[in-house]
Image (tube, rainbow, N blue to C red; front, side, top):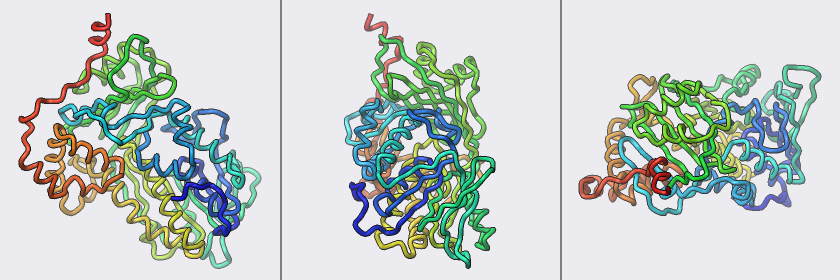
Length: 468
């Protein structure tokens, strides 16, 4: 991706419209500003100054981290955004050193790596990205407006713009453009609008998982300095279903997030929240909750299902329209992939635009299968291990799980394997890297008993006692 936000000497078109001010929408608008004379971003919510929660992002009160692949793409679209985030307090985490990770039933090894993870609140992230977008001279934002329908050519073969209105109705306006980008998320109305125009209904795949999680922000006492920046307790799927994490974010605050699959959701009252933390396989998060000062209410978010709309399989599709972000592919947010998946789609769209505006919608659709294959597999593979989860298991699913279990045992004491896993998780390598001949040989000949189990982090009360 280019790192220049200047308008090309020969832009692909005059005007691009992005509707939906999600992270996918903001990123797409920033990229399109390099390829069009003008870009307009339309958002239903009113954008406020500063990092504020807004109605259109119900998950904003919960923990957000940025995978390294996503950080790299975001930095290419908005040069300097990484420095903005760090200056505003986003925490840089070395994935193999700063995270105390209890995975399955063992603590992962901790050692320095080159894999960075940014930990921060969602409102801070959106605000800083939006500021970068607004600094571009050829971008304008129309907030407090929603898209009501498409404008089309006489034969409906091309989308030529959108009709806008105030949320809930009222006087409307039209906006014409050479390219229209839908970034409105899971609730996108593009499938219904296309069907009304005579196009086939898009094939939609869902995998029901009934994940629910609750989050609260805390401040630790000044004399408590954890030996980690993020502590994560992840279940041994499919044997157990509950998870918890504590993450350092901006302003010296910590977010505690507790959750589970298939209806094992944490209560949102204080006593129930604390008791859920007590039920986790290690006591560290429960101890944090006992010692820390609450700074926010307990917020709950329910995610019923993975969702994938296969626009690439439609026999007919109009030119002038592109769909990005959760409007195409929405996966279990527990895995932290959503923002990065949207960024990958933006990267694919830019590559398609380099060949010109004509035919870009069809080229982009053809790229979707390749762009989303790995993220979708990474996000759904673990959830499909639950026998209760309905969904088509891919060919070789049992063998892949067997190899995956052996790889994770290796990674519990082998630094190379753990680093490979983290690189795959951050979408820097293909999942096949975990099953290379070299790794398979290691799985077969290396025995965990040859190494001492990794020590978990000190409990905070013990640290306070030693400091005294």
